[in-house]
Length: 236
Image (cartoon, rainbow, N blue to C red; front, side, top):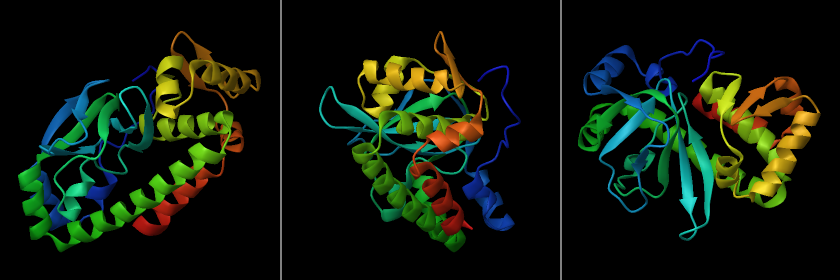
């Protein structure tokens, strides 16, 4: 994604946690694909054709309020998957899925995935726990959007993105940030300017560089730490 990109694990944590036999069986039904920035993987109301397990990419899940208003409600990177609703037997996508970070992912046909769920109790168990984590994180995001200031929410979003991008440099515009956070461009400009003035980030020509991650964590609301703690507690 950038010249400063750190070493990427090239694996998916959900799949890495499976017993070896189950993992090998599952991987045999996958294909590795390269996700392209801004590609749309699925629209709300469409049937899932594939599930995706990012290994060097990340996907933005966006809720659409009306034709003009959209808000990002979740990010999916190497810690998760896209298509989790299939675990509940629901094959219709509830959210707009957009590739936010280009890179590789493991893709499986939805029908094959349903077969794997029947085949592997370990897979069902792990993904059920991940679904629970996602539910908690969605609730956390709703509360965060309602009650926390834009600057703290921006710091949280940058940390979440950096965790999945494995890079200090994030290629993003003010317009796209506003789209992701549900804030007008002027609000993003003010919040980003404040973080830059505090020397936590540098913003120039569509590239945000994280200069001080510890400081950015301090500037973020507690939702960032809560999300990480929930994942580690449940998925461990």
